[in-house]
Image (cartoon, rainbow, N blue to C red; front, side, top):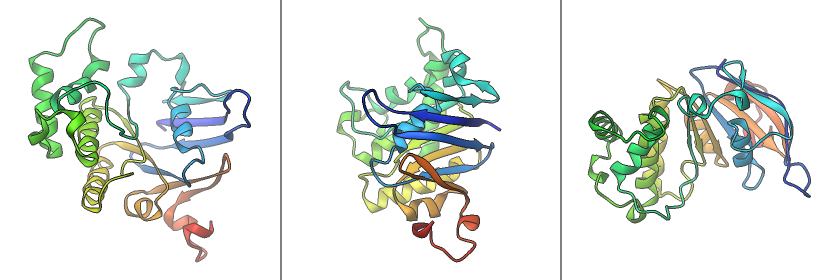
Length: 235
């Protein structure tokens, strides 16, 4: 077991609870989807799961240890989080952005050196985006930027990769490329992704959690959830 949530509840001050009594267990080597419509709380759930937002009650365990008791370096050298890409206020090249992914492995005042630079170049080649090394991230298309962020996540050498709506806003060709890469990631990593797109979940994921009105409405493999002849829309 790599990650577990026990009775997680969360709500913003003065507002009704967004998430209530969330229980989930993630084993290593799976691709897990959190499926639900826009605005249902998928991003909030991801952030609470990895400690970016604090549960109001309940807890997250990372390899059996409460995540809030771990040092940031312990968490972020194990987990790579890829948020929805909306561009950046600061100007980084593709190579500089990928290099940032090694920060969890460096000392507080340590700068990336030759070894990290070679790792970043090799990772961009692996993902197939060497041509973006000198391109400003602010000038990249949505698909290009998403590939750079995935390379940045991989250079961290994480155990768990989390992607928030990884194909939102991309054109069909870019969607196909990102989904192919996610399937490849699942061969060597544990992956969690959020999505509101049913076909995407069916194409890349082994396990599915369906989020509805702050609760997990259903959980299991695609085969288990549709074993009685129902479609996922009916679950």
